[in-house]
Length: 429
Ligand code: LRH
Ligand code: MN
Image 1 (cartoon, rainbow, N blue to C red):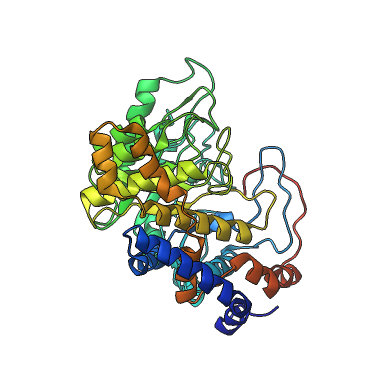
Image 2 (image 1 turned 90 degrees about the vertical axis):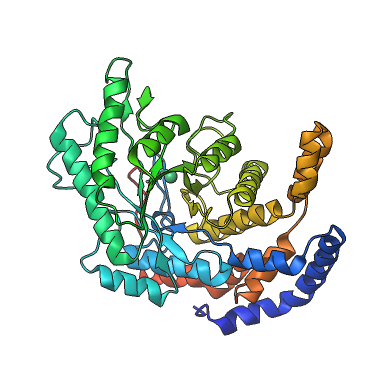
């Protein structure tokens, strides 16, 4: 394996430099002609970052099956090595979002040091009360933070409090809470009391948060519950975040809405009321498909980033939602999918910076619908590939991360080191 060093990347970039330079110069001329500042846009693209999920570097599955690939990560240290490769080549993903207990270790100082050795730090920590762990005293079959049995709720609260403690040891600043609590039959649970139990349990977790932490609440329309989900939509989520206090904000997983929902409007609403805590980026066509970001609806992702750009203009630098990827890679090399997804998310962000906001606002006020639509779409119709590539290049990354990754032989090398995992049991990870 050719270690993915700066020299190796420079070698791989060499044959692509002339074409890149030509494309970037042409784009820079076009952007300048449109009254934009290419250097400022490259600087902004260089500062853009999105976190990768530790659980995303292993092959994902569905409820039917999982087909592991070569070199599956055996533990969180392998996962960090793979996350390090993604950032080394894209320069877009300097933080990792861990999930507990999947990433549990004995020594978190050692884990933090391991991340550092790959140029990584830790982002939001994720709790897990949607599965029963071996030896767990009480089951989450009928819920966790909203279970009718106080002892089960306390077990779930204790797990979240432990995640905060682990997060503090790792240098994280946010707890991300998604629960699958809900029901499969009308009448099975009290919709009102279940929500009240959620508020009570979440408040107990909230009280343990350090002052500079956030609690990111994630809503989801359905699955694993198929009649009602306690935190099913942005409305329930907003009410909970409002009820808990200023450190509680809503996390928008793009796959957690019905296919026809206008997610960019939810983004605008939550941002307006200071409750947009962050995102789980992915894409979907039907349900919570957890497909690669922008692989189904790149225009939808662009519209989300347009609302983020509008919110940033309205609120200012304090507006800093957490950007995380949350995907399941069932048929691709997870490292390649995460690199491609980080690039597509950086693309949507860069395109959204191209909109002439003043002209758009004027057309909107004048009810000139088509001009407004065209002004908004102009960003999406601009191929910013050379601009985000230039940002990668200046940050020491690869002009073509996937080609460079394949040329490195990294996957084959880790496949030799890591025992093959048999295909088999269902489950997303
Ligand atoms: C639930 C979810 C949540 C994670 C899990 C891996 O669907 O989006 O964010 O904890 O996926
Ligand atoms: Mn998610």
